[in-house]
Each structure stands twice: as C-alpha cells, then as structure tokens.
Length: 405
Image 1 (cartoon, rainbow, N blue to C red):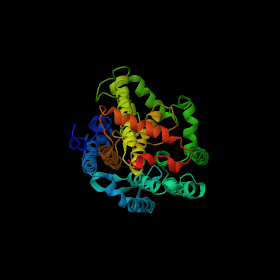
Image 2: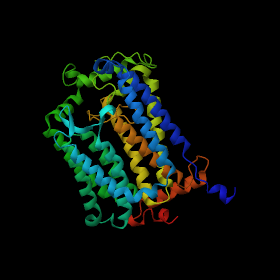
Image 3: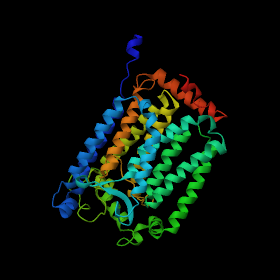
Image 4: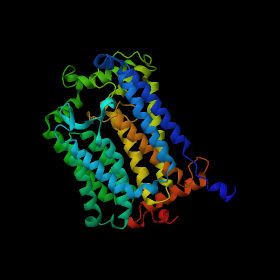
C-alpha cells in the first residue's frame, strides 16, 4: 500500500454505527414509554418523542461537525468552555432563573424544547478542560502539591456546585470523568486511590446527612419491605423487568408505563425496555454499550497525543459508566441515583451533549494510529506501549513514547 493511501484518515465506522443503533433504539423506547404520560399531561401522545427527536437532530449535527474536525484545533476553547459551563451552573441556582423540580434546581426553561440542564453541558466542557489540564501539567502529575492538590481542588469545586443543585448522580459521573482522564494521562495509582477514598467518605457523609438520600440507601437493601412507600419505584421497576420474560411483551405493550412506574421515560426507561423486549432486548443494549466502550478505549489507546488519550478516555468513561450506573439502579444493584441512560432516557440537553461528545471521540479515532480491526500490527503496538508505560516509576515517563510518535 502506498504512503498516500495509508495517510487517509478514516472514521471509526463501528463506533458510529453503534451510536446510531443505540440512539435509534432510544428514540423508539422514549416514544413507547412516554405515550401515556404525554397524553395525560399534554394531550399529545408524542409530546416527548417529538422533542427528543429535535434534540437528537441537534446532537447528530454536532456529532458530524465535530467528528470531521481535528479535535486539537478546538483545544484553545477548553478553558473558556469550562468557565461558561460553571457560570451557567451558578446561574441556574438564582431564584426565578432556574427551574425547580422535586426540590432540585438544575434546569432553565427552554420554551418549546422543554428544559435545558447546564450540568449536562458541563460534562462535555469539563472532560475537554480536564484533558487539556492533564496534558499541560503532565510533568507535575506525580507531585502531591503541584499535581494532585490543584486537580482535587478543581474536582471539589465542580462537586460543590452539583451538590448545591442536589444532583448526586451527575456528581458521581463527573468523578468518573475526572479520574479516568487523570489516570489515562499518567496520574499515579496511589493518588487515585487516595482521591477515591476521600470522595467515598464525602459521598457517604452527604448521603447520611440528607434524609431522602438516606431513605434511598435504606430501601436499597430491601425495597419490598415498603413496596407502596419508599420502595415503590424500585419494586415497580423489578416487576417491569421480570414481566418481560425472555422476549418481552412487545414494543408498546408495557403496563408499567401507565402510571405505575415513576419516571418511566427518563431515568427508569431501562425497566420499560426490559418489559417490552425482555432479556433479549436488555442483553443487546448492554452488549451495545460494552462494544461502545471497547471502541472508545481503543480510540484512546491509539490517540496521537496525551490530550487525545485523556479526552477519549474521559468521554468513553462518561457514557459507559453512566449507562452502567443507570442499569444498576433500575435493577436495584445500586441505590437510586437519578442518572439517565445515555441515548435512551428522555432529556434534550443530555442526548444532544452526549452525541456531540461522541463526535469528539470520533475525531480522536479518526486522527489515531488506525481505526480498523484489520490494522492488527498498529493496534498491538499501541496496546503494548500503553501497557508497558502504564507502570513506569514516574508519571512523566508514561505516555512519552506516545507523545513523540
């Protein structure tokens, strides 16, 4: 093959195809899960489906635009994006500006498109900024004062804002984004353990001090102890999943969505998916997210620079970890945290921002050292280099070979 042919940059078609499949399935499920609630609240069975479709169109536009750009050209915008997201998250706390739902103030009124949630936009802005910061401070990541301390301070600032918005679920996802980018960029393992331990204690304290969070933790152990009270949502979700059996009752034939399962078209849409498509459908969706994660982390391994490594790792962790958390809460494997299922749960800001993030991930994959499974030699070299450098005694030594490629 000629050098000119080898230099052509191809998109990761498998990653793109997986994203389209998950998004298409998500739109079908939002339509099915929301019809009863939409008709009751807005006298239109497709009220939520139409708005989700519009936001998804906006998201795919962002995906295609960002996917065809070189992600490195956008890097100078990272600090400004993080500042803008922070300001929006502060403004949403101002009375009469932010919209309060169930005691939480996280949204702006977006008129005909529903609501706009700045913290969802913040996920994209912060993953972009933290990748930029880790790359610029790579030489100091192994230093407690110059590396870990400022990184922990940035993370703490974002978490304080999210706690003021009463958004514990997004806080956990943000932690995953920050720590994955920090680790991929060369952060020391013992520093990572220290951060996880400190954050775990902080989240436990917040949970114990907040009555409704403590109630969720208590009912998580046995939701059937109070099936008509605090355990109602979890028990109904389990009933929904169990009634689906192997093949489900069929798309559109769920019973739980008719007022039995709260948040059926948002955070608990996975339960409706299980009821209507059964074990087969839920397994296929889980396999789709697993394959997405594999392709995303491969894009991180093949990235041409440390910034791309951190960016791809952060975005992939964001989407895969969020999906895992949602499925775990719906199946009562974890306490309810209020985390959406990416590409599936109703929420315009979430789906548009997630698709735009996939565009950046596709850009990293396009500019990496080969994206196809057929490029085995380059794939093995990239993986071996990452595995070898991962355990270098100094964090600055890690990834140096990759940066110099």
